[in-house]
Length: 170
Image (cartoon, rainbow, N blue to C red; front, side, top):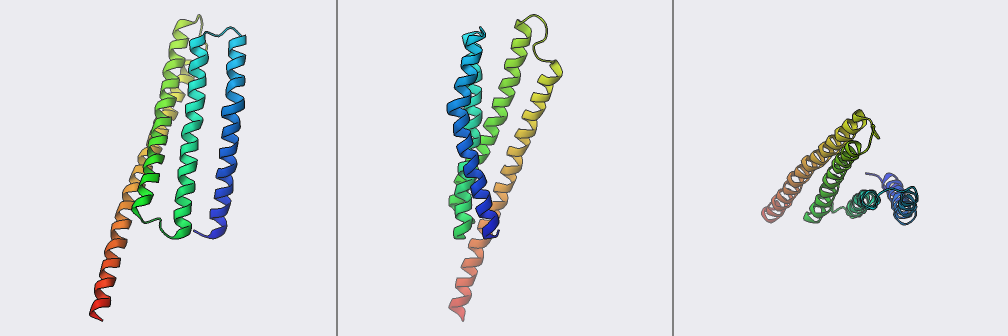
């Protein structure tokens, strides 16, 4: 990967992380205040706040881990055991986002049952569940890519040891 694309990606991730802080510190309290003022039950306010904060936190973990991986790329050390820790964090965060979205669908379904009429269309709840499955699929793809990283790291270690043996023979 070239220097320019890596720098552009780093800038994009830093801007995203700063915007996510604005969301956590400004938007979430505003949404909670609006819900409270409109007479929403406290449990709903807390649930929405938790979902928003945890959702943004998961994205922040992914962004920070990608920044760490980009640092390893810049140093030429991406095929090292250190990279596994960052990739594992990304997998856990994406899987957590999938579970969080599914929990949001369950919460929406419960709200639909407890209120007269349909607050949310049942099809929308089904679409949220489908999006949760897609995000879980992304976590699985990242897991497969981690396995490829394991194989590449092992191949690089083997090539290094073979080069050392060849240097001894010569």
